[in-house]
Image 1: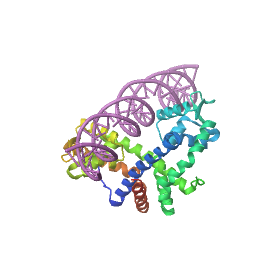
Image 2 (image 1 turned 135 degrees about the horizontal axis):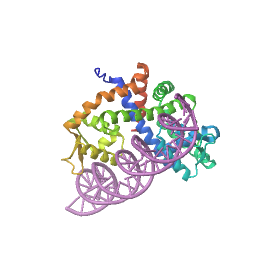
Image 3 (image 1 turned 90 degrees about the vertical axis):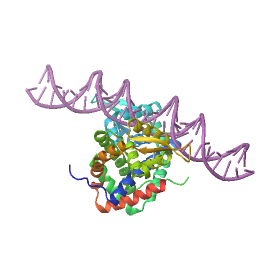
Image 4 (image 1 turned 30 degrees about the vertical axis):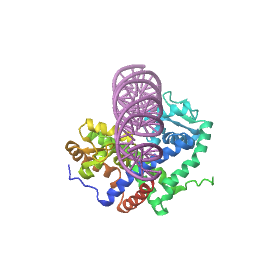
Length: 150
Length: 150
DNA sequence: GCAGTTCGCTTCAAATTTGAACGGCCGACT
DNA sequence: AGTCGGCCGTTCAAATTTGAAGCGAACTGC
């Protein structure tokens, strides 16, 4: 094993900032969504992704990949959302094993209701804190990072 | 309530990138630490912060703040680490309510053992993916974000 | 066709996280 | 001194997350 290349000052600052910002922003949004919409962030993300999908429906596995959560975790969350009537399940015609989760009208309504507050919180926590230049670099950089790990 | 200011393209890319990168990096590091050192990321962070503190000790509440976790969550993690012998507790002389968590020699050894692999993973997942310019901006930007929310 | 493998989703138990009490203690103010 | 609001860390139950099976169904090569 080669010598460890420790992080220099800038690298360390980037890393610490990344970890801190991740946790803080996640925590803040979790809070905001719970308070204003009664949803957890994972749940909100489910609604968002479904709402953007054709027919407002998506296969479980694909949804799990997009949400970056485990499959069993998604099963659980979909069950919760189903109980709440925001989401439904339908089996896949071409593959008996497959399950589609779809957004109900009620779910769509809840999402529309929740979105403005969520966006405002995202702005306050992240977007509006940065200038245009920073946003551009951030988008590019984090896009690379995510793309590479995906 | 004012009209909602939705996110434009760059803002949305920054936001999606942020969420995706947060989750993916967290997941990756969690994995790496568990595999190579038998520690969870929260646990590793506890060791790191304690190792950097005077006397390798810190008050519970301060530690919780730095780790950006709930106090009850910290109590739990410290209990786990204590069982494993990596950390100890000592009560505070000047305040009977207070508790110091401190890093044992064993904990220090485990940390030293785990650090190189962890740094390598951090480089691979985040740092080495970006160029110097991006790192600088990232450090500055995320520092602002974290500072503002803290 | 048909074994052998992989895939899609769920189930399960175990580990973790959370927020709301709780029990004591500190400190300021009277 | 005496009291009251807050803080410190823990405990508790409930919710969530995880990875390891499990169950069928679909696909592969022979």
